[in-house]
Amino acid sequence: MLKVAKFGGTSLADSEQFKKVYAIVKNNDERKYVVVSAPGKRFKDDNKITDLLYLAYAHIKYSVPYDPVLRIIEDRFKLIKNELNLNIDLDYEFKTIREALNNKCDEDYIVSRGEYLCALLMADYQECDFVDAKDVIFFNYDGTVDEEKTHSKLTEILGKSNKAIIPGFYGSYPDGSIKTFSRGGSDITGSIVSSVMGADIYENWTDVSGFLIADPRIVNAPKQIKKITYQELRELSYMGASVLHEEAVFPVRQAGIPINIKNTNEPENPGTLIIRDDQAGEDYANGHIITGIAGRKDFSFFHIHKEHMAHEVGIVKKALEVFEERGISIDHIPSGIDSFTIVLPSESVEKVSHQIVEELKKKCKTENVQVLKNLSLITTVGIKMAYRPGISAKLFTALGNKNINIRMINQGSSEINIIVAVEDKDFEEAIRAIYDAFIK
Image 1: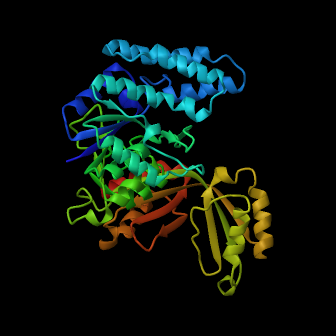
Image 2: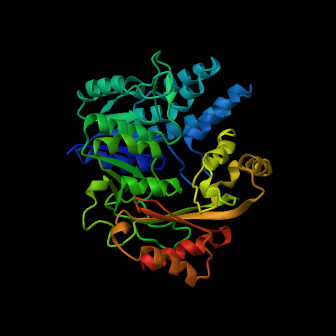
Image 3: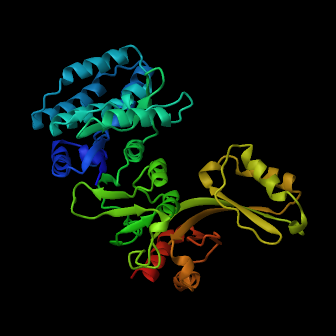
């Protein structure tokens, strides 16, 4: 079996975390390719290395001395090196970084150095190959991944290695300059390596033992999700319940490779396995009808009502143009016979809400346009829900028993989820009520 293992920033925050990663990788020959992030926080008020690198670049941009910030970064890496008795010449590496900063290097170059240096240290510690991401992950000038070139080079270089450490988060443009993914992009690097090298499983190591059925800040000690399908993950991730970069799913999903979310601090915990939708057998859903619950607060509803709307062609299109012209994306559009509602995060319309109302009235030729604010969306997800009658009734009863008013109901044709809107003040209580109804 071939495993690709990606370790996040908390797994590499200091020398003690390096030792845990060492044990996980060294004792299992199946973990042949390892992708690392930059060191994260060691404690609550600590700084992530990547954040410090962004700060160092900002100092250069605004002509502020950067060395105090870079010195903090250098001390972090040297502490790891010295405590693990490693041989990497960090003086040379930081000399190179200072020269780049003095020459006003690109932001992508400087912020990628956290992953680069971490991979150098880990490769030295593991006594295995270091493979620079700029030599195997390639971007086109439009920012998309050059899949053909990336596949060719990854296959060529990693195919010669018995065990390799690869920095995540970045690659290179055709001219050789550094290009980064968005924040958290080391997940994508691991996913690409898994897909190209034909891994049997992609392990994503972090500081949590996979996904939980609900937010532990709302539900006391929620149960762990043992298995989740890619489709369910997408639904829950959209509502913020994710420990994985959203774009990391697609390369492995296309290749049919499962993702295992695991905890570096509890390596024996099986974590959560993310599988293809067609792999959800009869024993799926961890013994529960639903897989997970997630939600977000602070949505706004623009409610448009007009008599005989059902016979008017193009009215929804006209309303959506108001938002499209402002570059505002829409979350949901529940509708009735003579009305429909446009649902979107309040922050996206915070300063233009009144103008949008007037434009909607004009476009739709109606005076009946209302804005409802301080609403939350909660999604209850389960790929097997469609085959179990009474799910909606059970959910609505649970909320009704807590005197929680439902302001919107939306269930897609796939029946993989039920979305309800409640007032912000009822958000936490609603999630607890749904959890208790289906899990306890």
